[in-house]
Amino acid sequence: MRILVVSVALAVFSLGWSIRGALRGSVNAMVIWLGFAMFWGMMAIMYSMARGRY
Image (cartoon, rainbow, N blue to C red):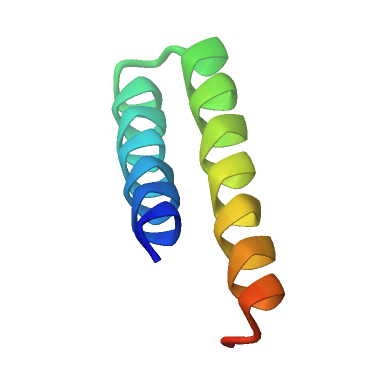
């Protein structure tokens, strides 16, 4: 359960940094952090599916 919470927290954190990068006009930072957010989001989804909770 803790892994799921950490994954979601990291996804939200990464998404926040992505938005911050976009606001500063830094496309590279935005893309990198968006990638991190998608990765952690996928981790959370995979983990919850493996546990049988949707």
